[in-house]
Image 1 (cartoon, rainbow, N blue to C red):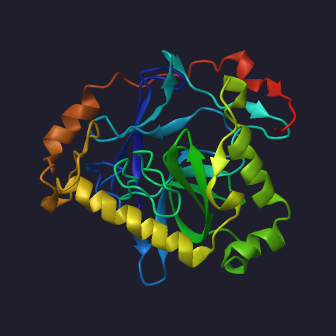
Image 2: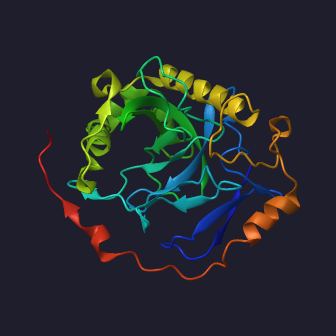
Length: 289
């Protein structure tokens, strides 16, 4: 299924939003209405691209907003840009989320001993193409890394776009280690240090930072899908999460198109991008602890 996006307000502003439509031009939530699987028989998953490779703006599915558009994260009233920690520039993969998944804060992960981070599960696409914000791609799962982010379980799924010219060569995590030397080590380094320039400590990992294989990763995804189902059917405390959707009839949060359209139309009109602050390009150098 093809998806399209509608941009509202100006990029690099607090009001900027990216709303989603399905192939029929109907508004949908990228969190709730895009299916988990692109091809369940082949274990091919949908991925919503939030952050294209090499960029710094911390874009994310707005889980607390009606219709869950993509917006830029805000810290202390300011737009959040991820720092460049040498030798990295921005994100080193296309970064995004698998829809219809949820890392429940009340669910203590048996592997990590911590609750979830209250978001859809994160994905790092290692393919060659630099994707666009809001693009929905089909990915083959290769493995996972268990990040412990400020006392929360934050799984990072490693995957590759099935349309990548080399996708057939990658079938498990060891293929990444063999064919992309040092990429996995760089991934650990990136996640460990990316918050340090903001004055925070290095992130920690379960399994001593070791990657788990494809089968393990798929089971983690299935678990977070089960948690999402409980979320949208009112069997789990949703807190501030907005479960408005247009297709999940059994959820109790389903709405008609005119309601979804009203949410989109209430957002400011689109306009030219605002400039990115010059200090976003600063490079930070420091020794690992």
